[in-house]
Image 1 (tube, one colour):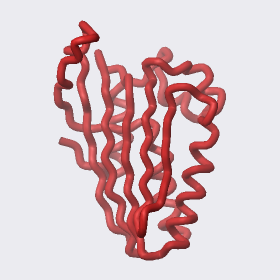
Image 2 (cartoon, rainbow, N blue to C red; image 1 turned 90 degrees about the horizontal axis):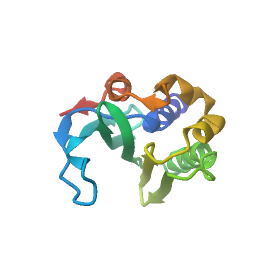
Image 3 (tube, rainbow, N blue to C red; image 1 turned 90 degrees about the vertical axis):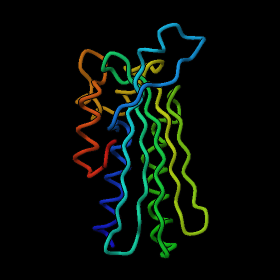
Image 4 (cartoon, helix red, strand yellow; image 1 turned 135 degrees about the horizontal axis):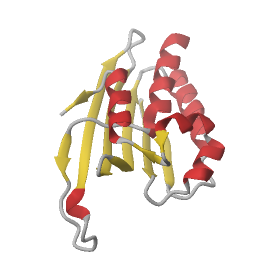
Length: 164
């Protein structure tokens, strides 16, 4: 069980930077440059030997190949309630370091036999220096203070995500 718990936790850690497959975002009338934004979507579906199932969707909004926003929803289904509780605790512990960081929002809950983790990270408006203070390992994602879309896409492909 520890092996599967580690795999799921690794997936949750990678939420910070995710995406694959491009589609143009609908124009937002309040932002004259919104036509330049691209939404990249990636999905991950996997069943582990312990019977748990992950169903994840990652949406990355970028402009000029720079990540502006990452939104993710990960659902982990298992008949083992103690496993879900352990994953919930680890996920909440992982994300709690971002509690005082503006533009980093998350929610982790268990509904029946499904853990749902939702994350919204607004890199466009976030204080990147504060982000790196609480997450120094995240520095490898940044080039000149920005996250490149190619970096994010390659992370999700390595995780086994399917991109469209």
